[in-house]
Image 1: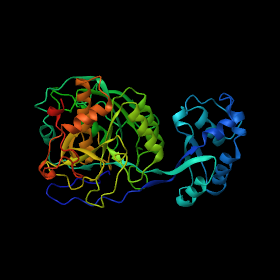
Image 2: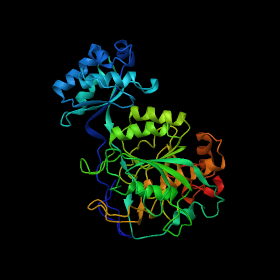
Image 3: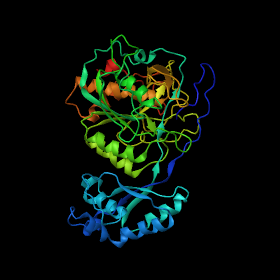
Length: 437
């Protein structure tokens, strides 16, 4: 969540506002690739194929146009789509989603509809169509952070035994960050960001969350500026949040987010940090995470900040293969807000974590600048992502599973675990950089 005001030290946390589980008027579908290809034997003749779209696919979309205000069909993973002005755009997009995408991602599209229409009825209509493999609401995802600028101590590095560790140079490695953006001109991040993808959005990190996460991972060490990041590594950042709040909060732009997940797989990044989450599972998203895992990308994701408010299962942390990260306070006890569950892998510092913020304020969403201490599983996760980069720098030939196993097996056991090797509150224990290296 994006905090509206800092939480004073020693005071109870404000209740987390209720979030959307899905984004109104936005759905994900997978068209039946076999049915579409029957009408499109020649991918280059897109307009012809679009006009010959089979009824099993065309009829539910026509129904949505008449009854649900279908505005747009966006082929999520199609590439090099030629112009085809002779056919309706939605038909062209539907065919392109199949014939211009990789086989394993063929048929995925995003539908934009009238947000006032009841989603359950629309999903029933789509689910009953023979030409649609599956349909689901676009899951809402939001950042998992709380602001607290009153304590400016980098206690987290001490807790994970960063100072004792013989840390290798990880500059040849790339850690991907999908978030609210980054201030790549920040003195502690200059030269750190290899690429910043924000086309169609402001370059500015309005919220500041992505800049804070980036600093925890890779703020320059020994540069006489502010703080030190966990790893001397390079970052590639995708901005997937809008510049203005929607539905009362900052929710991830689903189209940008899903495309970013697919782009990370082919970017050369070895690690992905996801300090965001939501309560609704998505089959589309799950497929992308299976592909990231198969591509050898170590994915670290935040467990979520609703541990004291119902403790719902949060995604993407709960997908198989993802390193789900919980937060501990300086006492090395679980932060009260940190979600628990059977899928938790490891814990890391996540309360009053000092890191970088954009140099310019963005009122009313953020007044802090340069550095501030924030709390959340969002802050715990980049500690683990940075540590994964260090392990890969020490062992460049290792596969993703070996890195994840190393971080978990070397985690320090905490008093709150009461002698158990794993608990749903702490996972395998506290990240220990010295032991992992």
